Image 1 (cartoon, one colour):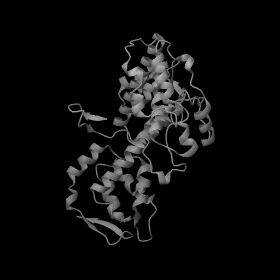
Image 2: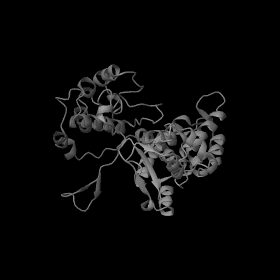
Image 3: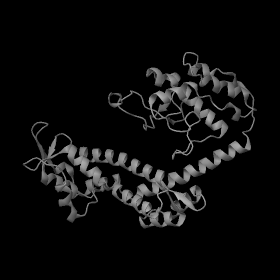
Image 4: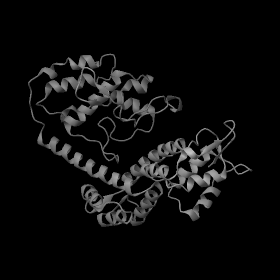
Length: 351
Protein backbone atom coordinates (compact mmCIF):
# COMPACT_ATOMS: atom_id res chain seq x y z
CA UNK A 1 0.00 0.00 0.00
CA UNK A 2 1.21 3.51 -0.75
CA UNK A 3 1.00 5.55 2.44
CA UNK A 4 1.17 8.99 0.80
CA UNK A 5 0.07 10.12 -2.65
CA UNK A 6 2.22 13.24 -2.93
CA UNK A 7 5.05 11.51 -4.82
CA UNK A 8 4.59 8.49 -7.02
CA UNK A 9 8.21 8.74 -8.16
CA UNK A 10 9.39 8.21 -4.58
CA UNK A 11 6.38 6.57 -2.93
CA UNK A 12 6.07 5.90 0.78
CA UNK A 13 5.38 2.15 0.69
CA UNK A 14 3.76 0.41 3.66
CA UNK A 15 3.51 -3.36 4.09
CA UNK A 16 0.02 -4.52 5.05
CA UNK A 17 -2.05 -7.72 5.40
CA UNK A 18 0.13 -10.34 7.08
CA UNK A 19 -2.76 -12.82 7.25
CA UNK A 20 -0.70 -15.41 5.36
CA UNK A 21 2.63 -14.66 7.02
CA UNK A 22 4.16 -17.93 8.19
CA UNK A 23 7.53 -19.49 8.90
CA UNK A 24 8.42 -21.79 6.01
CA UNK A 25 10.37 -24.02 8.38
CA UNK A 26 7.15 -24.86 10.23
CA UNK A 27 4.99 -25.38 7.15
CA UNK A 28 4.52 -29.03 6.16
CA UNK A 29 4.23 -28.33 2.44
CA UNK A 30 6.37 -25.17 2.44
CA UNK A 31 3.53 -23.10 0.99
CA UNK A 32 0.50 -21.31 2.30
CA UNK A 33 -2.41 -19.64 0.60
CA UNK A 34 -6.10 -19.79 -0.15
CA UNK A 35 -7.39 -22.68 -2.18
CA UNK A 36 -8.94 -21.50 -5.41
CA UNK A 37 -6.52 -18.58 -5.81
CA UNK A 38 -3.19 -20.41 -5.77
CA UNK A 39 -1.48 -21.13 -9.09
CA UNK A 40 -1.01 -24.77 -10.21
CA UNK A 41 2.79 -24.64 -10.04
CA UNK A 42 2.61 -23.98 -6.30
CA UNK A 43 1.00 -27.38 -5.77
CA UNK A 44 3.02 -29.13 -8.46
CA UNK A 45 6.52 -28.00 -7.56
CA UNK A 46 6.29 -25.64 -4.60
CA UNK A 47 7.16 -22.87 -7.05
CA UNK A 48 5.92 -19.51 -5.82
CA UNK A 49 6.93 -16.44 -7.79
CA UNK A 50 5.54 -13.21 -9.22
CA UNK A 51 3.61 -15.10 -11.91
CA UNK A 52 1.74 -16.90 -9.14
CA UNK A 53 0.50 -13.52 -7.93
CA UNK A 54 -0.60 -12.69 -11.49
CA UNK A 55 -2.69 -15.87 -11.49
CA UNK A 56 -4.27 -14.98 -8.14
CA UNK A 57 -5.05 -11.44 -9.32
CA UNK A 58 -6.63 -12.86 -12.47
CA UNK A 59 -8.93 -15.01 -10.34
CA UNK A 60 -9.91 -11.95 -8.29
CA UNK A 61 -10.66 -10.02 -11.50
CA UNK A 62 -12.80 -12.91 -12.72
CA UNK A 63 -14.78 -13.00 -9.47
CA UNK A 64 -15.50 -9.28 -9.65
CA UNK A 65 -16.51 -9.32 -13.30
CA UNK A 66 -19.02 -12.15 -12.87
CA UNK A 67 -20.21 -11.07 -9.42
CA UNK A 68 -19.00 -14.24 -7.73
CA UNK A 69 -18.00 -13.25 -4.21
CA UNK A 70 -16.84 -16.16 -2.00
CA UNK A 71 -18.29 -16.10 1.49
CA UNK A 72 -16.26 -16.39 4.67
CA UNK A 73 -18.50 -19.13 6.06
CA UNK A 74 -17.79 -21.40 3.09
CA UNK A 75 -21.29 -21.47 1.62
CA UNK A 76 -19.80 -20.12 -1.62
CA UNK A 77 -16.17 -20.82 -2.43
CA UNK A 78 -13.91 -19.46 -5.18
CA UNK A 79 -14.84 -20.49 -8.71
CA UNK A 80 -11.92 -22.92 -8.77
CA UNK A 81 -12.74 -24.36 -5.35
CA UNK A 82 -16.51 -24.40 -4.78
CA UNK A 83 -15.91 -26.98 -2.04
CA UNK A 84 -12.80 -27.50 0.03
CA UNK A 85 -10.33 -30.06 -1.30
CA UNK A 86 -9.24 -32.70 1.19
CA UNK A 87 -5.55 -32.93 0.25
CA UNK A 88 -2.77 -31.30 -1.77
CA UNK A 89 -3.19 -33.73 -4.68
CA UNK A 90 -6.84 -32.77 -5.11
CA UNK A 91 -5.95 -29.06 -4.84
CA UNK A 92 -3.42 -29.55 -7.60
CA UNK A 93 -5.91 -31.26 -9.91
CA UNK A 94 -8.46 -28.48 -9.42
CA UNK A 95 -5.89 -25.73 -10.01
CA UNK A 96 -4.61 -27.45 -13.18
CA UNK A 97 -7.75 -28.73 -14.85
CA UNK A 98 -11.01 -27.16 -13.57
CA UNK A 99 -12.02 -24.54 -16.18
CA UNK A 100 -13.23 -21.07 -15.30
CA UNK A 101 -16.94 -20.59 -16.10
CA UNK A 102 -16.36 -18.16 -18.96
CA UNK A 103 -20.01 -18.41 -19.97
CA UNK A 104 -20.73 -16.04 -17.06
CA UNK A 105 -18.35 -13.37 -18.36
CA UNK A 106 -20.02 -10.15 -19.64
CA UNK A 107 -20.02 -10.34 -23.44
CA UNK A 108 -19.50 -6.56 -23.62
CA UNK A 109 -15.90 -6.89 -22.37
CA UNK A 110 -13.91 -9.15 -24.75
CA UNK A 111 -10.60 -7.32 -24.33
CA UNK A 112 -10.66 -7.61 -20.57
CA UNK A 113 -11.62 -11.25 -20.97
CA UNK A 114 -8.51 -11.80 -23.08
CA UNK A 115 -6.33 -10.16 -20.41
CA UNK A 116 -7.76 -12.26 -17.58
CA UNK A 117 -7.50 -15.40 -19.72
CA UNK A 118 -3.78 -14.70 -20.18
CA UNK A 119 -3.31 -13.95 -16.48
CA UNK A 120 -4.91 -17.27 -15.46
CA UNK A 121 -3.02 -19.47 -17.93
CA UNK A 122 -2.42 -22.74 -16.08
CA UNK A 123 1.09 -23.05 -17.53
CA UNK A 124 3.23 -20.46 -15.77
CA UNK A 125 5.71 -20.51 -18.65
CA UNK A 126 3.06 -18.95 -20.91
CA UNK A 127 1.41 -16.75 -18.27
CA UNK A 128 1.88 -12.99 -18.49
CA UNK A 129 4.43 -11.24 -16.35
CA UNK A 130 3.36 -8.02 -14.64
CA UNK A 131 5.12 -5.85 -17.24
CA UNK A 132 3.46 -7.77 -20.07
CA UNK A 133 0.03 -7.52 -18.45
CA UNK A 134 0.40 -3.74 -18.21
CA UNK A 135 1.11 -3.59 -21.94
CA UNK A 136 -2.15 -5.35 -22.81
CA UNK A 137 -4.41 -3.47 -25.23
CA UNK A 138 -7.25 -3.36 -22.70
CA UNK A 139 -5.42 -0.62 -20.76
CA UNK A 140 -5.50 1.60 -23.85
CA UNK A 141 -9.04 0.75 -24.93
CA UNK A 142 -11.85 3.30 -24.79
CA UNK A 143 -14.45 0.76 -23.71
CA UNK A 144 -16.83 2.10 -21.09
CA UNK A 145 -19.29 -0.80 -21.00
CA UNK A 146 -21.28 -1.10 -17.80
CA UNK A 147 -21.40 -4.23 -15.71
CA UNK A 148 -24.68 -6.14 -16.09
CA UNK A 149 -27.28 -5.20 -13.48
CA UNK A 150 -27.31 -8.69 -11.95
CA UNK A 151 -23.54 -8.56 -11.42
CA UNK A 152 -23.77 -5.14 -9.77
CA UNK A 153 -26.56 -6.37 -7.51
CA UNK A 154 -24.49 -9.32 -6.32
CA UNK A 155 -21.46 -7.10 -5.67
CA UNK A 156 -23.47 -4.54 -3.71
CA UNK A 157 -25.22 -7.21 -1.65
CA UNK A 158 -21.89 -8.81 -0.76
CA UNK A 159 -20.36 -5.46 0.16
CA UNK A 160 -23.23 -4.61 2.50
CA UNK A 161 -23.09 -8.01 4.19
CA UNK A 162 -19.33 -7.75 4.70
CA UNK A 163 -19.75 -4.30 6.25
CA UNK A 164 -22.34 -5.59 8.76
CA UNK A 165 -20.14 -8.56 9.64
CA UNK A 166 -17.07 -6.37 10.15
CA UNK A 167 -19.08 -4.01 12.36
CA UNK A 168 -20.38 -6.75 14.67
CA UNK A 169 -16.92 -8.38 14.86
CA UNK A 170 -15.46 -5.02 15.87
CA UNK A 171 -18.22 -4.53 18.44
CA UNK A 172 -17.61 -7.96 19.98
CA UNK A 173 -13.85 -7.41 20.09
CA UNK A 174 -14.40 -4.09 21.87
CA UNK A 175 -16.90 -5.44 24.40
CA UNK A 176 -15.51 -8.89 25.20
CA UNK A 177 -12.27 -10.51 26.20
CA UNK A 178 -11.42 -13.95 24.81
CA UNK A 179 -13.05 -15.83 27.67
CA UNK A 180 -16.26 -13.84 27.28
CA UNK A 181 -16.35 -14.59 23.55
CA UNK A 182 -16.11 -18.31 24.32
CA UNK A 183 -18.96 -18.02 26.83
CA UNK A 184 -20.98 -15.99 24.30
CA UNK A 185 -20.51 -18.77 21.76
CA UNK A 186 -21.79 -21.34 24.25
CA UNK A 187 -24.82 -19.17 25.00
CA UNK A 188 -25.72 -19.13 21.31
CA UNK A 189 -25.23 -22.90 21.08
CA UNK A 190 -27.68 -23.35 23.94
CA UNK A 191 -30.26 -21.35 21.96
CA UNK A 192 -29.55 -23.55 18.90
CA UNK A 193 -31.83 -26.43 19.90
CA UNK A 194 -31.13 -28.74 16.94
CA UNK A 195 -27.48 -27.80 16.39
CA UNK A 196 -28.13 -26.35 12.95
CA UNK A 197 -25.74 -23.41 13.39
CA UNK A 198 -28.51 -20.79 13.42
CA UNK A 199 -30.60 -19.04 16.05
CA UNK A 200 -33.51 -16.68 15.76
CA UNK A 201 -32.76 -13.03 15.09
CA UNK A 202 -34.22 -12.09 18.48
CA UNK A 203 -32.09 -14.68 20.31
CA UNK A 204 -28.96 -13.51 18.50
CA UNK A 205 -29.52 -9.86 19.40
CA UNK A 206 -30.53 -10.70 22.98
CA UNK A 207 -27.41 -12.80 23.64
CA UNK A 208 -25.03 -10.25 22.15
CA UNK A 209 -26.73 -7.42 24.04
CA UNK A 210 -26.24 -9.35 27.31
CA UNK A 211 -22.48 -9.21 26.62
CA UNK A 212 -22.59 -5.43 26.06
CA UNK A 213 -22.26 -5.68 22.29
CA UNK A 214 -23.84 -2.68 20.56
CA UNK A 215 -27.46 -3.56 19.76
CA UNK A 216 -27.45 -1.69 16.44
CA UNK A 217 -24.51 -3.73 15.14
CA UNK A 218 -26.07 -7.00 16.29
CA UNK A 219 -29.42 -6.18 14.65
CA UNK A 220 -27.82 -5.07 11.38
CA UNK A 221 -25.89 -8.34 11.11
CA UNK A 222 -28.94 -10.42 11.99
CA UNK A 223 -31.10 -8.72 9.38
CA UNK A 224 -28.41 -8.93 6.68
CA UNK A 225 -27.68 -12.62 7.16
CA UNK A 226 -30.95 -14.15 8.34
CA UNK A 227 -32.91 -16.61 6.25
CA UNK A 228 -36.58 -16.84 7.23
CA UNK A 229 -35.76 -15.34 10.61
CA UNK A 230 -32.80 -17.65 11.30
CA UNK A 231 -29.43 -15.99 11.91
CA UNK A 232 -26.18 -17.96 11.31
CA UNK A 233 -23.66 -17.60 14.11
CA UNK A 234 -21.07 -20.41 13.93
CA UNK A 235 -18.72 -18.91 11.34
CA UNK A 236 -19.05 -15.46 12.91
CA UNK A 237 -18.10 -16.71 16.38
CA UNK A 238 -15.25 -18.84 15.08
CA UNK A 239 -13.88 -15.80 13.31
CA UNK A 240 -14.32 -13.55 16.36
CA UNK A 241 -12.54 -16.04 18.63
CA UNK A 242 -9.76 -16.71 16.14
CA UNK A 243 -9.08 -12.99 15.67
CA UNK A 244 -9.07 -12.45 19.42
CA UNK A 245 -6.65 -15.34 19.97
CA UNK A 246 -4.17 -13.86 17.50
CA UNK A 247 -4.60 -10.41 19.05
CA UNK A 248 -4.17 -11.77 22.59
CA UNK A 249 -1.03 -13.69 21.71
CA UNK A 250 0.66 -10.60 20.28
CA UNK A 251 -0.64 -8.37 23.06
CA UNK A 252 0.65 -10.77 25.71
CA UNK A 253 4.05 -10.92 24.05
CA UNK A 254 4.24 -7.12 23.91
CA UNK A 255 3.11 -6.91 27.53
CA UNK A 256 5.81 -9.30 28.75
CA UNK A 257 8.45 -7.48 26.72
CA UNK A 258 7.46 -4.10 28.16
CA UNK A 259 7.64 -5.53 31.66
CA UNK A 260 11.03 -7.09 30.87
CA UNK A 261 9.83 -10.66 31.44
CA UNK A 262 10.95 -12.25 28.17
CA UNK A 263 14.67 -12.70 28.82
CA UNK A 264 14.41 -15.76 31.04
CA UNK A 265 12.83 -19.21 30.76
CA UNK A 266 11.20 -19.21 34.20
CA UNK A 267 9.22 -16.86 36.43
CA UNK A 268 8.87 -17.23 40.17
CA UNK A 269 5.41 -17.55 41.72
CA UNK A 270 5.47 -14.09 43.32
CA UNK A 271 6.20 -12.47 39.97
CA UNK A 272 3.37 -14.42 38.33
CA UNK A 273 0.99 -13.16 40.99
CA UNK A 274 2.25 -9.59 40.62
CA UNK A 275 1.71 -9.72 36.86
CA UNK A 276 -1.82 -11.13 37.13
CA UNK A 277 -2.73 -8.38 39.60
CA UNK A 278 -2.01 -5.69 37.01
CA UNK A 279 -4.91 -3.96 35.26
CA UNK A 280 -4.04 -5.68 31.98
CA UNK A 281 -5.55 -8.92 33.28
CA UNK A 282 -9.23 -9.24 34.03
CA UNK A 283 -8.90 -12.13 36.48
CA UNK A 284 -10.77 -11.43 39.76
CA UNK A 285 -8.42 -11.21 42.73
CA UNK A 286 -10.01 -14.22 44.43
CA UNK A 287 -9.39 -16.39 41.34
CA UNK A 288 -5.72 -15.53 40.78
CA UNK A 289 -4.45 -18.25 43.14
CA UNK A 290 -6.57 -20.84 41.32
CA UNK A 291 -5.17 -19.78 37.95
CA UNK A 292 -1.60 -19.92 39.26
CA UNK A 293 -2.23 -23.38 40.72
CA UNK A 294 -3.32 -24.57 37.27
CA UNK A 295 0.17 -23.77 35.91
CA UNK A 296 2.71 -26.57 35.88
CA UNK A 297 5.57 -25.55 38.14
CA UNK A 298 8.97 -26.87 39.15
CA UNK A 299 9.38 -28.31 42.67
CA UNK A 300 10.68 -24.95 43.89
CA UNK A 301 7.62 -23.12 42.51
CA UNK A 302 9.03 -21.72 39.27
CA UNK A 303 6.76 -21.46 36.22
CA UNK A 304 8.14 -21.75 32.71
CA UNK A 305 7.46 -18.65 30.60
CA UNK A 306 5.83 -20.80 27.89
CA UNK A 307 3.58 -22.39 30.52
CA UNK A 308 2.57 -18.94 31.76
CA UNK A 309 1.67 -17.92 28.18
CA UNK A 310 -0.28 -21.13 27.61
CA UNK A 311 -2.36 -20.80 30.77
CA UNK A 312 -3.08 -17.10 30.24
CA UNK A 313 -4.18 -17.77 26.64
CA UNK A 314 -6.33 -20.68 27.74
CA UNK A 315 -7.89 -18.58 30.50
CA UNK A 316 -8.65 -15.80 28.02
CA UNK A 317 -9.10 -12.96 30.48
CA UNK A 318 -6.53 -10.62 28.98
CA UNK A 319 -7.61 -7.02 28.54
CA UNK A 320 -7.32 -4.82 25.50
CA UNK A 321 -4.06 -3.09 24.58
CA UNK A 322 -5.45 0.19 25.97
CA UNK A 323 -5.85 -1.55 29.34
CA UNK A 324 -2.23 -2.65 29.21
CA UNK A 325 -1.06 0.88 28.42
CA UNK A 326 -3.13 2.14 31.34
CA UNK A 327 -1.60 -0.44 33.66
CA UNK A 328 1.86 0.75 32.67
CA UNK A 329 0.85 4.26 33.69
CA UNK A 330 -0.35 3.01 37.06
CA UNK A 331 2.75 0.89 37.67
CA UNK A 332 6.11 2.19 36.44
CA UNK A 333 7.97 -0.83 35.09
CA UNK A 334 11.28 1.06 35.15
CA UNK A 335 11.26 0.67 38.94
CA UNK A 336 11.29 -3.11 38.57
CA UNK A 337 14.58 -5.01 38.54
CA UNK A 338 15.20 -8.38 36.92
CA UNK A 339 17.25 -10.83 38.93
CA UNK A 340 18.33 -13.64 36.62
CA UNK A 341 21.33 -15.67 35.63
CA UNK A 342 21.24 -17.77 32.46
CA UNK A 343 18.30 -18.50 30.19
CA UNK A 344 17.36 -21.54 32.31
CA UNK A 345 17.30 -19.61 35.54
CA UNK A 346 14.38 -17.92 37.24
CA UNK A 347 13.19 -14.41 36.46
CA UNK A 348 12.40 -12.69 39.75
CA UNK A 349 11.00 -9.18 39.66
CA UNK A 350 11.40 -7.05 42.76
CA UNK A 351 10.57 -3.40 43.29
